[in-house]
Length: 147
Length: 293
Image (cartoon, chains in turn blue, cyan):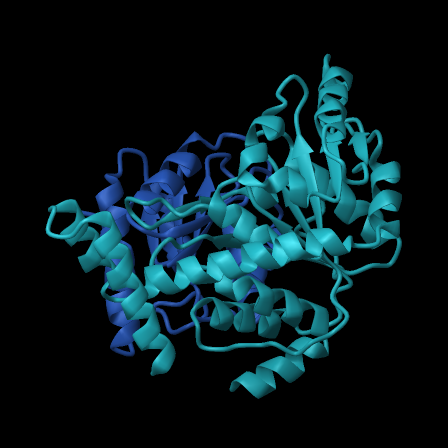
């Protein structure tokens, strides 16, 4: 898969994003890393130019409840409805429902085993192939629950 | 959308259509060989000398001058997993904004077929869609990188101060192909000395001297000179032969690697069932069969 790993907003801590990028590469994916402090518009632009199938958003700044919905909104406006979006970093439990409602299909917190992310991506592809909705602009319903 | 609709959309400026077509070329589902007036620059050099940052500065200059700049940033795929981390665009300022820039990251995909035979189709597609400055960036000076860069009609070789790595790499043929050589990071000591060493090494050759420039992408120095040098450059005929040679060689390699029985030959040679010269004969036979079919 071609996956964009993005850091959005005023958040310069990208150790996590880099670890995830490396893990995804080792699992055979092509990862386009955006670098830090990107705007939602820049991130969507990168997804278009790179023709990515999935987007992983890393956020540790506390602005997830503003920035993630913004990204999802622009993605839908650009008709990138089938893009698979997942998020990671510090996203408290109480904020998660709202994020899922934007079309994000998985949220991975601290301590996540990278295998969970691979399992999520595999599950998403399997569902996509069987006609189920997994994209950011498609019908809500399923999202990944980490065990 | 079918390929034709995508192509019409891409030509009229739709980025998504263009992006989809690039993917289709990459996966071998679409070919594009329309000959047009292509302007393509290959940028290569050792890791860490500042190629991407320098390209960011070129993007800035050219877009300000009204050009449309497309970049193909090629990075190696992991030989173990086949995956890749493509991070060049993050060092190119302005790569993610404005309608006049398009940056696409590509992994070399070492598996059968690879990316090399598809680069020229991508360049032609960009040119057809109105992109007036096309840059192909690769790292290093291995055979596959030279094969990729050879598709450009002009080549910029970038080195860092106190390295002179490109002189070491001369055997790989990259220095002979360069139209312009830049020593970047001229803000650091010994950049001038490195440039002198390169000039000295070039002067051992009887060919016309290749311009050697100093730049600092970080401090925005020497960029104007580089841009005017690139803009006024008339691609050299003798270097064209070298480039065609590299293109043929890399296609030849790609034919061999993409043959389904290539792996079997490797195994047989490795197990001692065949000698190397027998393996070569057997490979030649395979390619001959393929050419006939």
